[in-house]
Image (cartoon, rainbow, N blue to C red; front, side, top):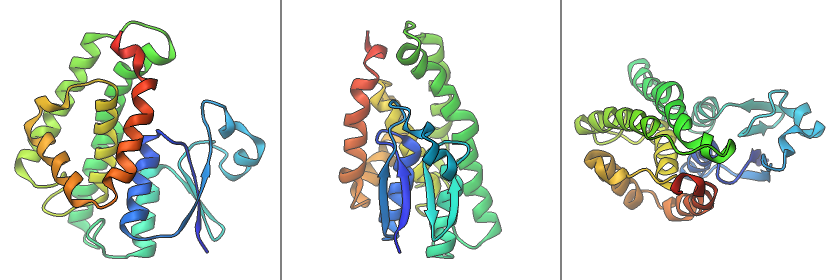
Length: 215
């Protein structure tokens, strides 16, 4: 039975899940939830996920939300030991470190630059964009040491950070200034058979949404 996957187009977190299920060929039933239309607050969805967040999955009665938890679950449940999240405590710790860097440091810094012009009609703040740049310089440094963000193999951390970085690109931040990030993006575009099908539409959806950042 396919997994019910509740998602919203343009969500970086949902994009990372799409890449995992495509990479592992996991059958899913996509169910669109429009957050701009407040569909995540519908009683039917709140009954499924009281936190009313997306992405959310329901796998044969098992409900889970939070994208990084979902990615770990999907690999462990459907391809245990896969290099995306290997059965090795130290390798998992490195992957988790990069997932936490994205969740707790990189993306929150980006939201302080991206969201106020879009959601609050404020002028873009160059200092906030510079703070994002400092975080991206750190990621660029990490990628000067390894082929992928968590070592020599593609992992779920690459999916998470790819989703974040291309969102910053869609918002108008110049990613070309980070040589190692740019090389990593080019590598993923060539290696992932589903890149153009999943990532490019994501960018196209977000570019108009982030138009206030270009004023």
